Length: 411
Image 1 (cartoon, rainbow, N blue to C red):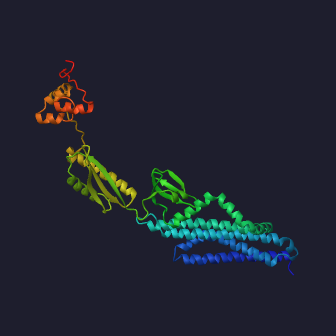
Image 2: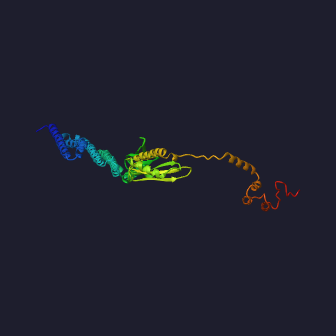
Image 3: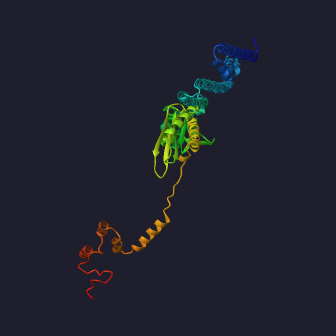
């Protein structure tokens, strides 16, 4: 009869060899499938090591259970069983994480965002990334919980704490209120399709693209290569602009102030020439209107469209520059100018002298025609008999002394 330790060594070696053979057989089958498709090769590269770890731990556990010496089972089997259980849990968590990463990357690869019409792809990408993060967190939490439950002391404490789980959950919810709010806000953003990765947004007065959406914060890649990090609750409680919510096409305006001698018809013809000569314009909108004409200038607004925000910005700059150069060359009279009207010196002297002579109101009326003099003095209280009668009604019949002293009762 074989020695128990030798029998155990042979059984354990055979179990390990069988595990390696099974691992290679599964890998070969997957590689055979990979000849027709591309994804099995990636699956082998990602899941090969964790799968071999799971198979090897299970084989070792089986070998120990089958051939471990009987005289040592009562002493060594409980710790060995617990150790192997923890190893299986860790290897299984590793394998599940690799499978989740492979599946999500496969979905992301089928929905590319570097194409013109990528709204659906961006939605799938955003939701897939959030689902992967949730799945990985869940796998880690379950693995840690399963490992802790392998310890008898932890199981006892867990049973005693189960009765107070309601109170503990309330306390934990209050303590982590902001964290939980951000997590739920992140899930709400993703699955409500309000925000997606690579969306063009204007938030906090900054223009940028959504670079990353996590369960607690959102990263906005600004146009000048800065990164704006905001909590997820900001996007559920504060207004923001999403320029790619339904599509990436946008309208943009170019405003130019020109002189009154401008010809809007000629400007429209030149605008058609500019847009026909560039690939930035998407052909949807081309409008030139005079929107204001006050203050000595005429305001012309040009409305154009492009396939996305960066292209629209370049198109607006192109139209503005070409239109300015064309106005300078084709219609120099339409260049904005400020006019100052200078009065004749002789006329200014006459007006100043007349103003100096107009110190007395009744003297001014004598210089006016008869009809204008009557109108001019119709509201005065001196200068005529009618005016003096009107004044008496307000002065309680106190006589008004004319400027030359006539009518003074003391004379």
